Image (cartoon, rainbow, N blue to C red; front, side, top):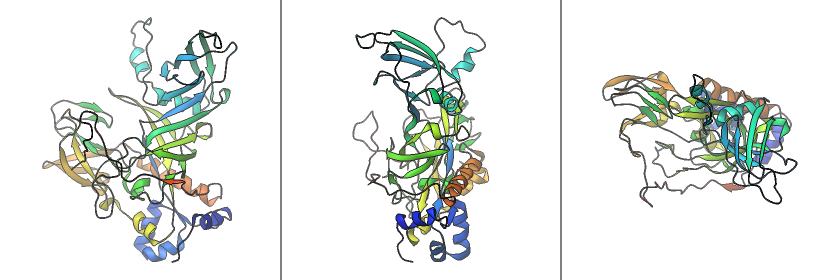
Length: 402
């Protein structure tokens, strides 16, 4: 087939003539008619995930009070928000924990308050709910107000957008616990003596597994984000594209990440959910879908990758070190089957990502494109593919998962 352009694909989208497949549908089509014929028929492939994305947060602009206030400490429903830049600009981190006021005596309600975090407040604002705001100001000649309390909603503030420094891990790890006590981690509870295993990535549905060398996704790529439209803003934090890779170029462990930005006022609480990990802390479940233009047969070949051809490392969390021992690699097909074998023992497995909702993200994005309401964008710059991973304790060292 001849090389397609994004402009040509967008023209078909606007005329509602584009052929769109979810990643799962494309893989099935390739199995049926092959790569060459599939590439001739399909214009866009939609991918999706719905998983915890802890490195997320929201920018809010409250608007000025009368008299004006220069906020330097602020709480939204008891959750501290960062206020160290504009006078009434805030950044609310999804993983920030609600504070229990020092004047409040401990009660049965106290643990429940500690379970609430920034992700829950972001979800409530997106859902149109009221959120209590309490602010303390730095008194200056131009900002004479010392404090302020009010109730805000999504519609009573100016800007409200998600800016997420690290989303869409290209791959991640499988957590287990070889110790003798339960562990409470960012993957959830891990039971002792290899009692369970947890993985986080949806595998062959995942956006960056279908574009392993980041040839289609770049800065400026338009994406489905939380039920609204977002964009790739930059490489994500902990972006590590130099991770070791299989011959199909998919990484064997945590690799590329993306920073995303999107208007939260357009989003839906169906796709942005605050969550809490017992004895670890709050986070945010977020639905993200990335459309991949079928420019040539090579795109289809990469998107045809199956769970049997993707692997993740099994990591023992009972060793309290930055670099933990691994029990080798397992395929996502094994993980999705519900059991893996670790050190000769059969271990039950559960996904942290919702495979059902990941599939729904891809389907929703497909519907938008077919309806002509979502077009593709040309990247304005590529995502770097040469970033090393530098740990803090030994400057300049590099790590990888063996």
